Length: 246
Figure 1 (cartoon, rainbow, N blue to C red):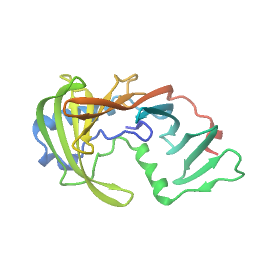
Figure 2: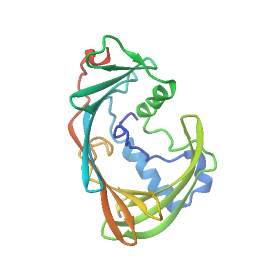
Figure 3: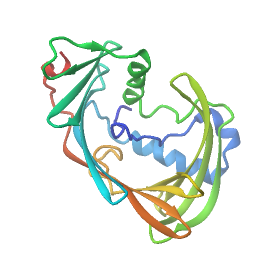
Figure 4: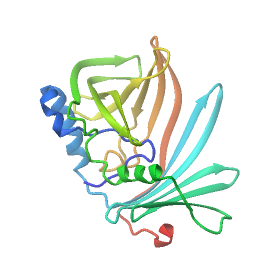
């Protein structure tokens, strides 16, 4: 299955189960996480062009950033346009395993650090395991509620991840509705708070194409919006402009 993550969020992000860890995952967790995998395999996405607009809130101010992501899953090529503000746009191009950066007004492409290039590989295989950790675990927590934000069945997943060459253990919680659809993810924040990401309903056959979200800081029963992500100009399985990859 080839589909997308939500550009850096991507996201996503985030939403597949390590089959090697089945022995350490209880039956109910297995069923819910298997449902995610089945959703991923429901539609084959070969090309994607979408723009993510993220609004971040902090200290009474808001900052809006825009990122356009173009992915050719078949040929493992990708282009990411990032708005740097004041009319400046950076373009990261990943072709044949090599990543370069271009900016308006610059006569030539600039090589990027190897670690940044390897990060592109994950977007071509979003249906790969969430972690290759053979000791990953998942526990069904039953019905949970996070104030008025979200309620549903929760699975807590713990595993080690290889991030830029460093292995780090992380725990995430997934909240599902009665139909097994993913409603939200929860992770530990700072000062005893939780970061709750509530997803908008999917807008296409693939649950990760054009799916927005709202992120909250949740503590002592109170929720504060920290970021809102939405997607614009979502185009799936259409011919791509070859000049984008040059």
